[in-house]
Structures are given as structure tokens and as C-alpha cells.
Image 1 (cartoon, rainbow, N blue to C red):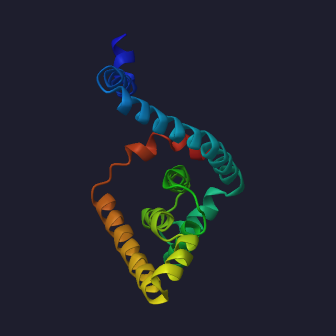
Image 2: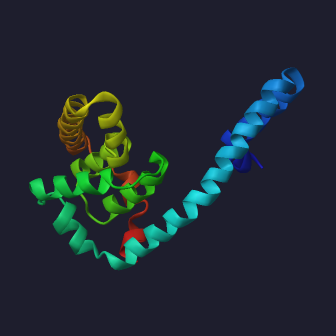
Length: 180
């Protein structure tokens, strides 16, 4: 029983907060329940295709190709490919995290994964088109290139920190997933 409580402490805590809200602030509880339900529906419709895409990526893209294209020795080509992969999709950022984890397990460099995630979050092509329309080409271009510069710096910084202080237990614990 103690192990179950320890394992599910976050969901139990959320349930306790919801019960308290329903008792002490029913309007807030109703609004928060509605928001939680809407996010749940969003995830139900978005995550299954993402998992399907991840499964296909595991099968179609061999580990040696990912290492070649996005690994530590991929250089500028890997950075540009990561940037391109991150700018094309138009989905919420939480969709990119499982894809990034899959890339890491297949041998992509930390720098390229950070560039991929940052590009997904801040450099989507449709977003850029809207910026050009409302803010002008000069602003959109400057923000785009400064963001690329910042992503390269962040990726290099993350690589330096994680190389100096390697704590890859999170990567090693799921290593069997990429070997299958």
C-alpha cells in the first residue's frame, strides 16, 4: 500500500486539490475541470498519431543513419537538418519531446536535439509567415536569425554541461528501447 501511495503521489495530490476545490470553490473547480477535460481531449487526438510516427521512425530510420545525420560528427549539416526538422511541423511542443527522446536514443547529439526542440518551439514556418504579415520582414528576419543564434548557443552550452557532468541514467534506463 505504501509503495502504491508513493508511486501515485502526484495524481493523488491533484485529486485532493480537486476535491478541496469542489468543496471550497465550486466555480473554480468547474472551470479547472473543464480546462483539464479540454487538454485531455487534445492529447487523446494528438498523441496516438505521434506514437505511430515514433514507431515508424524507430523502424524506418536505422540508428547508424541518425548518428550520421544528427550525431556528434554531423557538424553544420546536422544542425541545419535539426533546424529544418524543427521548423516544419505545426503542433504543440509536448509532441516534440517524445520525438527528441527517440532521436537521443538513436544517437543524435545533444546540440542537435536542443536545436530541434528550440526550432519547434520558436521557429515554425507558419508562425514566421504571420510575423512577416503583422510585424514586417525586417523584424521577422531579425528574430528568426537571433533565435537561430540563441539555439546554437543553447545547444553548445547543454553539450558542454552534460559532457562535463554526465548523468545519463535517464538515457541508459531506456536504452533497450532503441536496441529493439
